[in-house]
Image 1: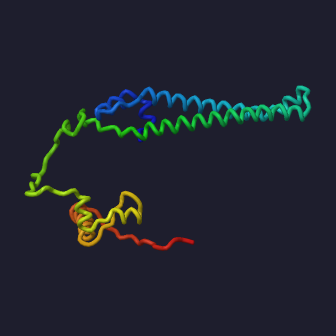
Image 2 (image 1 turned 180 degrees about the vertical axis):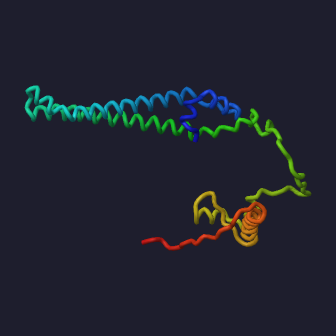
Length: 206
């Protein structure tokens, strides 16, 4: 999610950066929601300060000649009104913040400054190339289709652990472990890293 402070600091840069991705950031809506939330926060702080000062008025009212009971009743009436107003201001601030969060959550991250402007990947610039893409005499299959054919069960994984997981078995599980080991060997043998195997407790504390 985009940083609120970054947008407030340089909103035009955020708008221009997102425009490079072909997106229009609703800056007017952002500023309206941000101002609404700030106003509600300021109102809440003012009411809190007023409530604090009101709580000290009983002695002042008694000093002015009112009875203790009358002074308490007057202060309680004010505090009751302030409580209602404070609840309303807090609810308004929460609602504005929720709308603001929703706007930012549906806004993608800003691209790096070096990313070229364009509506599709066709406008991307090739920085470097290594090797030659392999050409096949057949139509390559989608990895999900191939995985289901070769020991990958997404539905079972979903039942076990939820979304974004897959259950591998057989040769595909073996390949998965081999790739992990290849990565470990590459970095420990060629790049100076040290591999560790940490103890894992399978029991839960009572």
